[in-house]
Image (cartoon, rainbow, N blue to C red):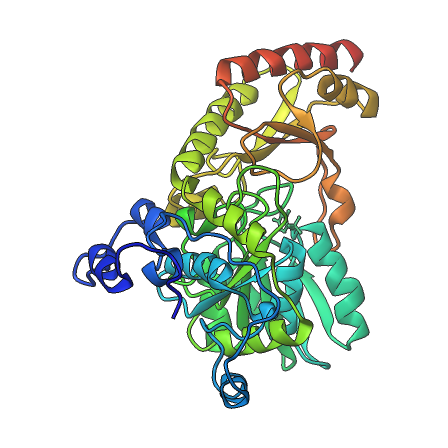
Length: 414
Ligand SMILES: *Cc1c(COP(=O)(O)O)cnc(C)c1O
């Protein structure tokens, strides 16, 4: 049906690129091949941009038949997507062994909202990790509350102790690991086991690790969420989110997403697919450079503490070593004393770090953060102001020299 290009026949291409179930591919191979169906690419390497609102039907009967059947992977109306969006969604599903399907959203926050609304109903209770991304926390405190859903926040280090919080009305547990801003690594297997024992749905914000470093569905998570804006897109130029559903969870997710009218533009989906192809090699470099800089920072005068999951000083480091395949490029460090002006002097003078929200692009960023403000179930007593770094693909020697001069500015004002 979709072969408007003059090229090899889809059947011939399908044979060339077919996945042999007896030869399961490794994640770095999958990230290159996933979602590239010949009937969508027509022989072009990456699925091109199929723009559409109206789809034309030859007859009234065809139009009626189209609406009556499942529109999954069938052109129906632009809001249901075209091969460009389906290709990226399928690629993300293939990156999560055991997953049933993926839906795409115009931002990470939109993905979080759809995932939660696909599970929760009035009267339900949500357990949400205290180190959650701040907009997730405020969604619970505002939108969900307005719809009669209550939220209890829990200590990120709770582990199997979560069982003691699960009550009659508990419907879902929201996890984020490592935690936003502070990087506590949760004991995901223990929380998943407790949730399964009580029929509670688990949702994970997996933006930091992506499926490459933590395959969430395989580890028993029901709905795994990415701010694809970050590492999937990878170039700081598109807003996007995704939710990938585990067994039995996709139908409700898709229904809720259709009801909310969620769709992403084919142009954005194309950029998402383009970013995805280099995810494995980018993440490897982000991870290696960030760890080099984190280790260097931990030795510097003026630094009280480095919050990086691969360092033994990070809460949940043992879980990180057990469960993750590596680290990405985002971490924080706590300054030793000093105030707002000294922190600003450090950041303002940096030559190679941009000052701005988001992360996951090819460039380095530095952000002043105040994690203690976004807590209700746990307390933070940091020794000084905190800075979050995203380590980009620049040379680490340049970044270290930049931070070295920044720390000297900090110490002079402290
Ligand atoms: C950025 C981010 C989000 C939200 O993504 P947007 O695309 O900015 O809406 C969600 N979770 C985490 C952990 C993030 O860092």
